[in-house]
Length: 83
Length: 401
Picture 1: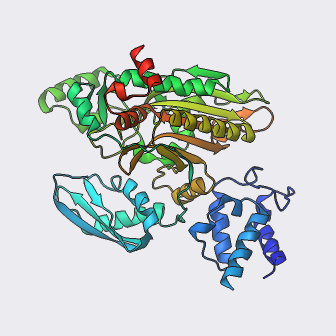
Picture 2: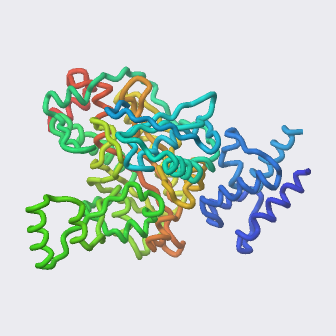
Picture 3: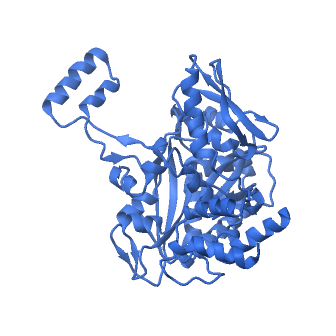
């Protein structure tokens, strides 16, 4: 799966929560108030299910979850490790 | 922890829990059933597979198995393990004195007057004043601070608005009274004279409209509810008051009290200002603790959310997003207690209490709380009762007060 594929799937998941507002790949959608803190759990569950990953303690860095870039980096690093 | 009772009941968990989450099980077990008087959470390999409960009478095994597993599955199992993360560690290593509470008790400085309730005298009172002033002075270096003294009682509605029922039902302390009705008073007097006081008296009480406050910041948010704060600046409010949390089990110590004193600081404003102020104040407190030569650290923490539908989500997101830092000081070799916390709420309370920040919508907020009994106790554990061994600045402040 390419970076672009991951990015597209992440953006598709986020879209319903953005209320049509623009979001750059490095925008912190928590800081922008688009989602509340409990959304983090939904994101983590999405990542595990969508990309067939099991998150580990080493992945528990907020920088992995607060931007599109962070999520793409998290998924691609893990799939690269798995490969 | 030792208990006089000897009945042990082993409860197998539905499936193993990572060792790193064992503490999350331990902090909840006393709230599962009042019959539980102690417990062991054994770690086998790197997992918890069972818990052993102590009780005075044999426990109904099937019912307790269901309740313990329900708690573990709802509150703990769905959390991902987040690694411990310290954001500050004191350069000082001190070996705490032993039996400090007992020594204080012998001198009459403390007296246990109930479960988790301790009467305190000198030198603790002067140390309370010293530490309270010290942290307030640090805050005043950077902020124009408004101080309030709140009534002890807080409207139950304010706690409901804050989401306290959903988050921490285990700590709630309702305040009630006899219904103001002549017949009720007479019936109460007649019955009490015959049977003494027991929980049947609650039938003569009606109101649950006030509670004892679990912390001070809910008073502040309730005070500021339905207001629009001036934009473009940070609003800082501080208060000190008695706080009450039912903890279900208490040791004879100042480490965990039912009735304790919190100095709290609340920040309201923009996200950037609140976060910057939390960080700046936190660093000042660390420097102060270092100057006093105290041993401890500050790490990412989480609140004891309990039995809510979103308990796991709240705990995990709180840790992931570093919404809470706990300042911990040593009270025994290898043992620390939390003496303060530095919290960021996003717009949770701004939304809940209708507090806006100018035209920017609900205010962002944060709060810092110090448990003064714990702070003083940790100081005494590390420096002992001989004032000659205390840091000069503390000795001077206390002897001059």
